Image (tube, rainbow, N blue to C red):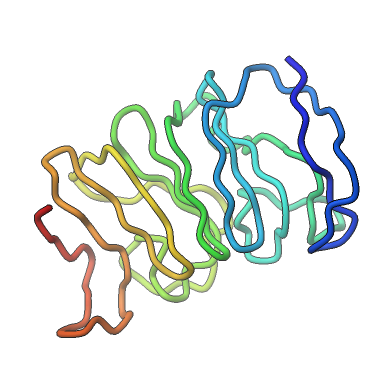
Length: 173
């Protein structure tokens, strides 16, 4: 199926609508500060926009900006993605088994891997026994809702009003 999306001529200026061949229709689309991600009905993830922090899940050849959607190949055949969330410079996907996969900027711990690694260059499963049903990203943090209704904040070192977060800080909804 052919889908219409905007193409970028510069980092901040959309110039026209172009048609892009995508094998399956999009089911969800999410905008981050500098990039966009979309999930297809077939569970694939497509990303486009600024790639300087590896938030696209791949490195465009010779460019820091990817103007059209490209599939995140590292997820293909390994994960059926049901939802994607975008922060300023990071991306988190939720698969059909309730696992989170993240990539991009993580120096504030928003990637959820228990460290403050500058960049996660390729999609990486977050190592936890928690099963999730929803995920959302802010500028420099990620929040995920578990199947048991617990909100899990992935901040790692970000200052909260009363304490510092560690791996997951749990708050009942």
